[in-house]
Amino acid sequence: MSPLSWFALASLVVWVWLLLGQGFFWRTDQRLPPPTEAHARVGPGGLPRVVVVVPARDESGVLPVSLPSLLAQEYPGAAEVILVDDGSTDGTGALAVELAARCGGLPLTVVSPGAPEPGWTGKLWALRHGMALARAREPEFLLLTDADIAHAPDSLRLLVSAAEAHGLDLVSQMARLRVTSAWERLVVPAFVYFFAQLYPFRWINRRRPRATAAAGGCVLLRTETAVAAGVPETIRQAVIDDVSLARAVRRAGGRIWLGLADRVDSVRPYPGLGELWRMVARSAYAQLRHSPVLLLGTVAGLGLVYLVPPVAVAAGLAGGDGTAVAAGAAAWAVMAGTYLPMLRYYRQPWWLAPLLPFTAFLYLLMTVDSAVRHYRGVGAAWKGRTYTRPRARSGETDGTLGHDDGRAPGFPET
Image (cartoon, rainbow, N blue to C red; front, side, top):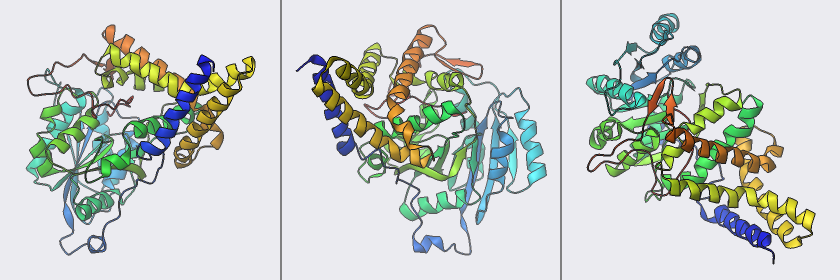
């Protein structure tokens, strides 16, 4: 057989293994577990006290949609919202106060912690301030949610009920990202697909987990577990803060659940490829621990898994290599088939599935660009802040990798 045929067969073997042996990552049935019958009936005292903490930096564009959805939560218990204005220059804090006065609902407190201290990333510095204020209210749960996340009216109730019914310490939902523009349709569902491939939700949600991750846009965290885990102080340098948070909770003995959201949506627009490119390139190399070796391995892996099948089909047809065509087509078919459930979740047409190799090629370029940005000193840049590679102290990690061998590009969280 030709070398091309061998590569195509190798890609097919990998795809068969991914189909059957990677936690059925391609299925989209990991949704918020329903409360038990006992927890479905809320007692006279209602559900436990919750404080919602929202870190926000220059979010005036999305706040009119997201914040009213939090204030309008139909929660049968004590709840309030703390919005931490993280050095905004667009009037985010004043807008939040205005929205609260206009919409009513849950009580809102707006605070500003000032510039981050050395050794802290901006979002975690904001969370530190907000969580400290929240703990003074003695809540049983904290809901950490981003300023671009809109919640259905019963979202908080369902999150807390699920945590109480199933003994969970961290409940995280991957918000349904906005998919409106052509580039969003091409790139966004694939982001969630790649994330689930590297962090299979089933493996995370097992009683004996095989992976650890969270989605930072919507995290319900038991307060006593947060204290036991020492967060956010123990992950203060993390650029990929959500997965680092999950690791800290797991180390503290907490139970974690992660799944896809039905009633939690991101309202942040990414209309063009440039916006999506910057969002991914911001943190992709951080996920690789800033390692050139891991970068080369990732590029090679993406090439073998996603690019070899269509190349084998095209080159095989041109050169009369039937084995390469057959193996490449089979691998491509498995790839497209595993992508279809995610496209259905995002209500996108089936014909986007065969285009996954092109999207993977874009992610490959974004990852390489992330490394180039890092070595130019502008790698982890977000809203006027640039984070260099963190220096781990004794007994600490750099907070960039959430699973021992998992790597995924990350969308920003604030």
